[in-house]
Length: 600
Image (cartoon, rainbow, N blue to C red; front, side, top):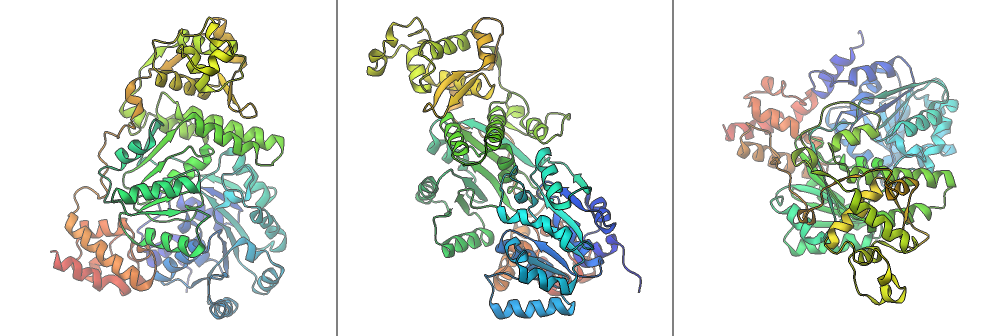
């Protein structure tokens, strides 16, 4: 019997009529035996790119994944499509692991999911020697690079695979890697050669917004107002703030759950499972939460504190809107967050080059926060995608800022910094500018400085905003060793001498409040009966609960929306719904037909 084409297998196993843009080329690279690193945006269908080749190759495919929950969800999704897959990890019963390994040895299992820690043990490598894997797939491949957003030392050891199994194909996938990180990943995994396929970083369904942090509680509650019926993630910097925010939201009637490394493992697991299975849940979390979270209907990601880099930001906002429907990414930022991030970098214990590089990455994020033109273009430019038109869907496109000549005010600020010896933080410098009468100012004689009071006609929020813009523009540095003292860069000296002008974004009182995007964010696709879609989701939720799997394992939101559009009345018509393969048609087809008939 001739081997099916990748397109035929995609239809017959997964129920998709064709590959998404870029997928077919990646499948061809892998089947041709070329080591391949694929960088694809979240929601672009990375899993299909290695699952289809795995089913066409003669032999076992080993998928290396960093999280047991992610492995289990991937295996459940494959099994729902009739694919023989298994995960072996410490969270499963030992007898189940032993039985699945026997199925691997017999050739029954086509895809085996393992953590890097378990895979790279001498015992597992020796066992795989007897099997002769056809392919190794490294998921979340950015974890292999110290330049990436989520470096994990145990991933570095995966570079030994190409020598241990020279006949096996190698593929790696990530959604988050700048140019330097991509080169580092490929070098460590492939050595010389290999393909790097960058499928783009754009997520056009995400509305990107940033606001200066003024009073975070009203800013957060204002954003959440009207979003009670959808799921979202709120990222916090510390365990303490995570608990505080979760308690605040519960008091306001939200179904909010905390998630951080200080919680007992069983509590974290329960909260994650509830977030994945239930609707309208708000997960308040540190960065401990997120990798491998494949809940398609997350409608927003709210950063209460600045993330550590553009890569981390992109990775975290990528958890929203995986179903392709509109979703929002909102970030609050302030200089206190920037100072804290710089302290984290300096205390990291890494070499000087690593520290310098991480500071530069944080500088880039600050510049993004204070951007004056399309945020999407700024974000894509960081990852090497230049050109393109403004998105029309970020806060700066929807409500463009007014740019003015701020040279005079910037010179006042710089003069105050220099005349106080570049030894003080933002609060004291602003007090000097505004002519405050404080003990600290009197004790140091700063009330006698020529700059004392020259900025009294401007409110404190104006000067705070100006400091932020100058930090983002590389004109001011925050000296962490100097307890947050403001220092001028060489570029700032030129401004102070009148050799250079500075254009700034107009700072108004309205900046104190996080603006709501003008675009209405609707969770449902236009033209679909909301009652019918709700009934289809309810049936899916019940089936997922019975099987103890995430809802998307039964059917994705996109499949239910297509079902609501087409309204099939028999199994033959149901088979034409996008995402309904033969196995799912057999298992779930009649159940969903009954729902459709009830709401005919």
